[in-house]
Image 1 (cartoon, rainbow, N blue to C red):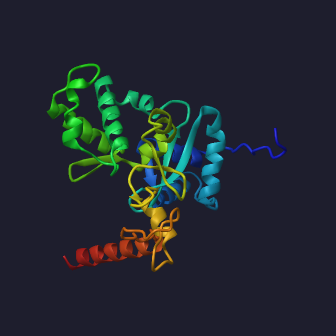
Image 2: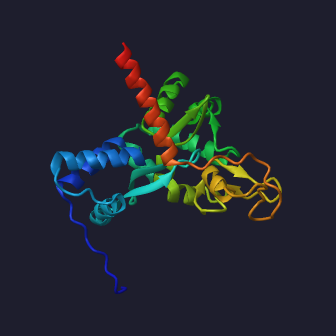
Image 3: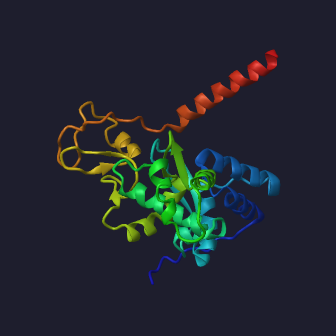
Length: 266
């Protein structure tokens, strides 16, 4: 044991309410997490100074550690928005989903997951997923039912749907990182920059390395001529923009100002 022992956090009513509300959401973006934190202080301790978010979450995590639960921070794969999810470290996340879904529904999720991991794009078409309905364990499921179940996965933030194609939600990636690496060791893809699990991203046409879109954006931020960090060949894809919370806030504010001025006119 090393000398620097970790200080055990103290859970106040503010922390407890925050944790309960995060549990009901499962996953939240950083702006919503900050809003939630402010709300909890307002309800329980309006005179207290709001603790720095990182310290606030570390405090909760030090108490949750013995329960093998953790509030984990990640970013969305498509645009790099910071997200926070409550993650169960003790079980594979598919068994964590067991309380919300039946056996045949969980098996449908496994089949979708496998197709997503095996694909080059990180997406699986609803047609391909629904074609596997006959192979499901447990109670027989019709395709119409399976379509509803896929929508349920989207509502519960396990999957994202884009134009009839499904990929993993940031929550699922945070929750299932270890499970996916252990279950699909030959098919799993890793980002060359952050070494994190990669579902969707860009790849080098010469050497085949892959990078998350937010990692591509940051890595090539200052380069007019982007070259692969591994083989130095020209990077053949359009470089996405880096996520900027300030810019996001401004567009959000201008949107809400427009809305309020419209409502004043009516």
